[in-house]
Length: 511
Image (cartoon, rainbow, N blue to C red; front, side, top):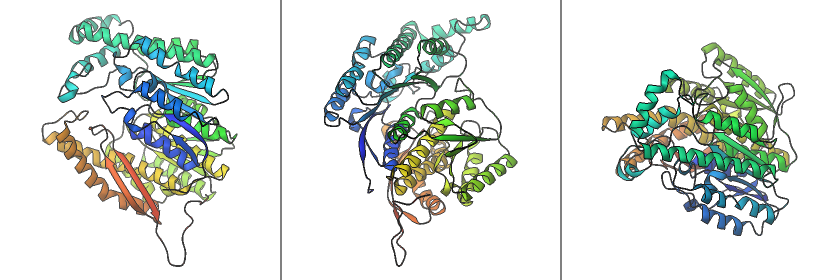
């Protein structure tokens, strides 16, 4: 689709096959002009069906043989268990997972000078929540048991005296076999994470990032995080989040390749500095993500200015935010926006701000934008896109059209889908008596997907006309990839409108 000057390839093994973990990292490479090679999608599994780690290991060894200058960014969860969802269930033994992770040693022997980075997760407190219907009925801890496990795991460890009676009740509701399986999975994952820490200390891995998946400041994970932090050296980072980590490490490698250390200023607007789904404050999370992306926090002499819309905001704070971004734009600065209101604002309130920056022309000047899920998810996405764009400009391989496709997809997803389309999908399901939207039976999923396609197709041209009026949609495809309403996958090809008397140089355009 794009004319790109490809530098040495980067092999990337995603966390799973969702768009945020598979599609977006590959698009970062397109923006910067670096070829990112991923395993065939059929090897990555799909939702409750695990990926195929052994086949991925075989593919990785064979595909990288002729790419001696390649680098690697690899999900340890995919390599060990078959993906994020598979990492939360006890079906893979510790010995099997450990054997699979010897692949990192094999890669180091085959590519002694390569950059090999890995990212994994510290198991979240709740297993994957699905209703007991269809194929999901036999899934580990299907409803209502997963809710009991979630409540149990969110108690203090050990439970406080005031929690003791409820803890006993929850153990009974969960049942000993399921609770034992859950604890077994936690113990296995902790052991594997320790093994990864040791591989980093030995030099097998250049860098390791462990993300604490969806967990606050209380729960069974606290002792694991503390022990892993104590065991970790300087090349290991432990952060909130999971889905964004692949993107952040891809951005880190894009900057490293051109010997660039991005300098990032952070500007906060609004109030509210703690997300209940994360174990650190918003400023700590952002500083950690800046560091693991290979950048440094520099508010005085930045290459990039990251604007942060905090969870609680007012009309006046939004006015100041928009004015500040507009002022930066006039100086041709690289600016990015992380809207962190996803979990606390109403859909209407978040949508209103997205419409505002589209109509004011602010959105079209952004090098990075995201507004979805946890703080770490949002900020990691924004930093990765912005660093990829600036790395491409500095190396002369920047692809403006690919960059605009990325930003358009983010607005179509984070704003149009999550704020406007998804509530309509859920309301239609509720009207049919389907109140659990985490796993839809095939016929129901098809109807929801058709509704999603129709509604997004209606909104997409309007959003694009405000965002990039010189472009049109040449091709677009949308799906609900996991037969649930939590995410949509959007594939889009944009093309320049052809004015009289010339062809716009969109692909090589500079800021």
